[in-house]
Image (cartoon, rainbow, N blue to C red):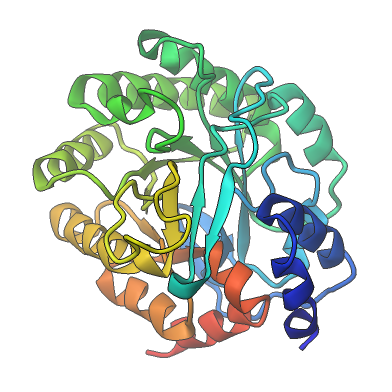
Length: 330
């Protein structure tokens, strides 16, 4: 109800400004996370509906996002060193299609400042953090950036997502190749094992993949993730495709497309991964969830958890309990 009143004002603002205003307003709301408990990756989630990375990039609004009723929240992306990302404007609404294009370019305050912000949060929610490499780090040294983030975050989070799929950092998607993905996931698993011994607790490792690869690429990802014993896969990140939105205002802007136009393709990728992995690795479904029925479709395609972002922009916080209710049904 409150969001329906605020939405016209928010949509009259520049999208990035509106995003920041909405996060500020969120701190005045609170709802208990709807109960639909599920255990995935060794973690107990109060419900399977999570906030996707990008909602709170710098861990500045953790308590406010947690108070919306999510079963878990994924913060970030964060990089080892601060970087500004791409110049504004870098966020665009496609209202007619209920889609969003972003080209933030992994703007980040750096992992040390990020951890300081995270330590100020009081929530006891399940927390994941999406991590990436700095734009000026060569791909050959990408594993070191991911390891640096993992070490800084390890005592404070439940899982870490290895982002090798943002279309807004030049060359990042090349990290999904067999050789590079193997090197990164192997390094991260070995680093996690050492940190687990040091801290006496386990942090799950998740990899987030692109919706734009072919079937052979999905086979490679499934094989590498299985071989390196990764705990989960998020399907998917945003798409560079403009299928279904071509010709709409701002559809030609560069960046990754999310929201309703992504739903079909991201769900196809999810279903194919489920076929390839046969339940060996839990899947997290994201991309275009705009209703409870969409969330249910992700579970039916093989997901154990789901994440929303663009749907929150167009539907508001009422989407969360709607999705939880749909996921609860057998």
